[in-house]
Length: 153
Image (tube, rainbow, N blue to C red):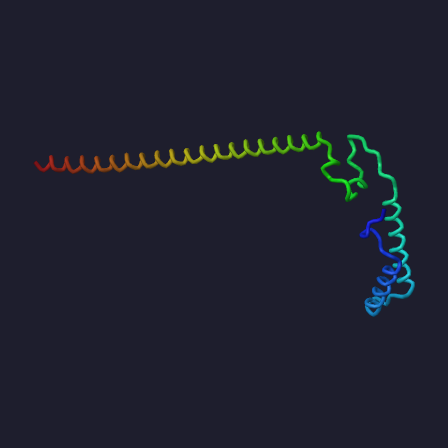
């Protein structure tokens, strides 16, 4: 059976050829020979499409993909073409991919958390070091003032 989108009638092909010749003649100087070649090309492509569409469907084994003729048949539901094992394998692959993605996100989260803790710890250590230095500086100043007071007396 030919589908309407797979064929052009000879009259339509002829009209297309002459319209192409009419609108592009000035720009490309298309001759009648070019128009006939185009017409023959359209007709032969329609014959080829008809021959392919009329050919019997291929017999498939489980390792092969389903026949294209079966898939393009509008009366066959695509869910009927795919065996249950393929559907199960697809679902398993999807679940595995989701699990790998979740593990990857978890690892990224843990790495970021660890970096954050490291930064906070470094900042805290820097702050404590700064406080110790300030305290030591104040103590040194206080000791210096104390020594000067003791020298005066």
